[in-house]
Image (cartoon, rainbow, N blue to C red; front, top):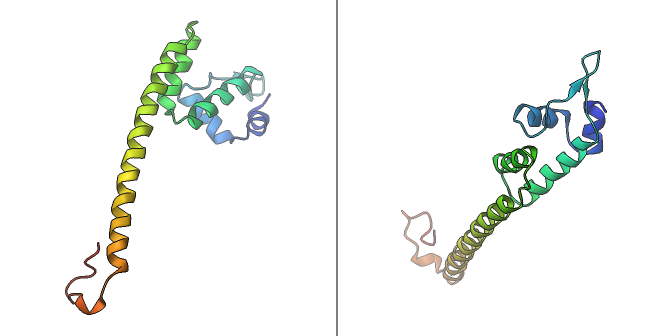
Length: 129
């Protein structure tokens, strides 16, 4: 299938497909006699894998590592498990950071809710931030 057909079949753009080829995520397509890219059905499965990896929060570099392992003929399951462990740790840290931020904003809001404008110093923009 040509690049436009693959883009339509995978809800992506031709620009993204070219980028994926250039960055090694998608093997370079065979070319027709007229010079058009000619992708096989396996490209759809590979793009689906890339999309699932991105949805899990993996970087394109990490996804490329997994694809490289698979392309070398080895099952990448152990490597994927390590990547997902790292991703879970990062998510846990993000959640903790967001909870701390939320607590701080709630505290600031509570202080601001009880503000007396008469007590505000003219040189301060707002003492609650």
